[in-house]
Length: 396
Image 1 (cartoon, one colour):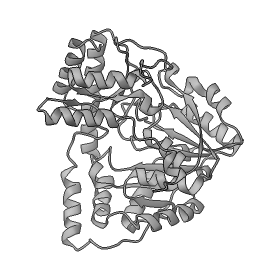
Image 2: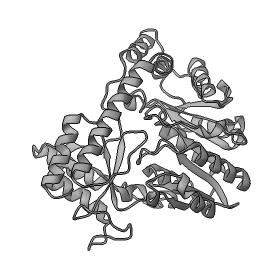
Image 3: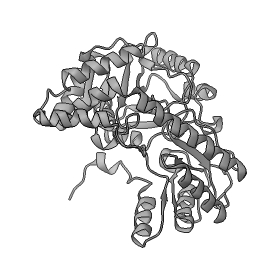
């Protein structure tokens, strides 16, 4: 078969080898502690499940309007107005997951040869989506600044120009958990206005925040018409398998992205959307309990790493930490690689899985070699056991 250039531009996920090895070890009966997953280890709140079940019983099983049921689009717009963004229901497309919202946005905005700027470490699918759309990538490394954007603003200013079509900002960040300051976001605004750059503001971890101010870029002066706000239900409401997200932006974007949406997925699932209305309107207490649990786990995990002499930048949100790793458990230059040419952090993750039976994600998957991403979407007991295993096998 003669495959397209747009598919050949994209490499398989760098996490595939670790995932395959974890499956092999589990098939052999090994007890693998999986700290690679990017989803909450909580059940969807019962009231959300009840709302979806009631919708099923009421026959809400057919097609909906392509952009989403009116009740959910209005609930999303109301939520966004609470974030300071003057959105109406007509500014929203409901999608089967936030990933689909991102894909539609890239397809609507990026042409062959356009420049897309990423803040590294960056979630793995940004690069893939940009390349499928034909973009050239320009990356800004935040790792020398403990993954914060504010100290790296000079580097960002040097990286963007009139040639930059799109900048992707993810706060709270996957994989670092960083929440960018208002000062940093205002500087992003200034650069976007100066160079006429459209910005994707990926806010999927918005509600998993440990006390830092959350700033929605579209709420800043000058950004409403140049920002696409991405969010969804997977992380805050433990609804990963429900596949429900959304994009919000100026009406001209909705018109164009809506073409991609209607000709690809048609609409998000009907009864799932009714569950989404309930999630937005009536789950604050459940979300707060989940965030409190994540914060407690984060504090315990940082204590454990400190006890083993491993200095880990403290995350402000989400449920990940980036741990500096090496074959000897030491931080190293991002340019170093294993003797076989494979990034050494990827080798570290594979070896740690083989020896300690702890699954993590190599930082090179996110554009930042030299680290492993650990998810603390696991019980405190399993986190403690994971660190003990890594230490016993010499990985900390």
